[in-house]
Amino acid sequence: MAIDKEAIKHHIRGILIALGDDPDREGLKETPDRVARMYQEVFEGMNYSNHEIALMFNKSFKDDLAVSSDHEDIVLVKDISVFSYCEHHIALMYDMSVSVAYIPTDRVIGLSKIARICDMAAKRLQLQERLGNDIAEIVSEAAGSEDVAVIIHGTHSCMAARGIKKEASSTVTTTLRGQFETNPAIQNKLYMMMNQ
Picture (cartoon, rainbow, N blue to C red):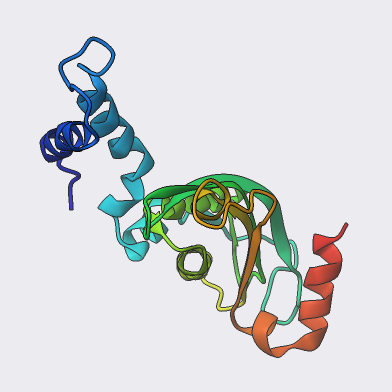
């Protein structure tokens, strides 16, 4: 699905009119085009399925560092900064920090690919809970491992700037797959690593 820039421009112009402003005044003349270009960028992930994102970022390395299914070695990339937009209000989810862990099987994925996966999955209208699931699904496919954990901390402007207006609140979600869900020793190891 391609993002329709012309339709966005048309509708943003209509929103400006609905807000009671003049879209032809100097400060707003280019706003519909600016918003359409911004939306193309910040919602880029909507152009791709999880499977397509996994294929984009599946660069992996077969290695001789004793990476095998006989081990319970954990790869953890912490504190990946992303932002997204809540699908309920199209409000910014910000100060988001994603940590992704997986247990390699016969290969390891490029570390920068994990951050790129998080970025692309966040560039959609999202729920934080779904974002964790999307990242886990994509990393699992790209890395060839069923053992994936995703922990996300985020602040939601739909809670901080409107409605209940609790600007100090944050949301933490965990998505656990494979041994991270079923093996308490692996869970404990992950949480110890998260706190280092």
